[in-house]
Length: 125
Image (cartoon, rainbow, N blue to C red; front, side):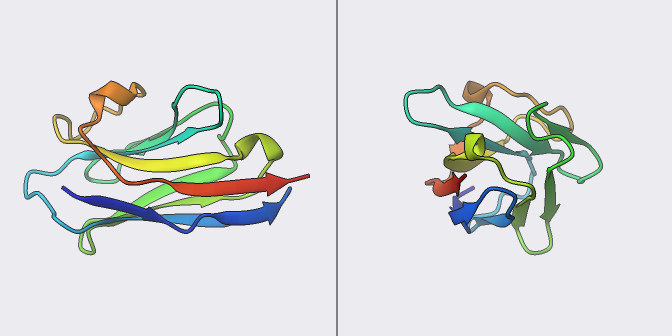
């Protein structure tokens, strides 16, 4: 697994962005994909996760109803659609792979084995 996140940028509050996560070294055994974010001076926090099949998703309460996670295993890619963005969504966003699980989505960063390099999202008021 080798992940690369992209799609970050600067938007005004209420705007939208779509982040992409590409896996350039796909593993045949599959994995849960997660999105995390880290704001300056804060710990890395779980944002959303999706099972290998795509049939199960999980969201942090702070983004429920605004963010949508998806994946396309035929393209070795995932995405995070972010709508109604708020200034408090400003952070570096990371995609990550939990290769030990296919269905159960955990929210703990240390459970994820592979990480993309992060992409900056800045939301201005």
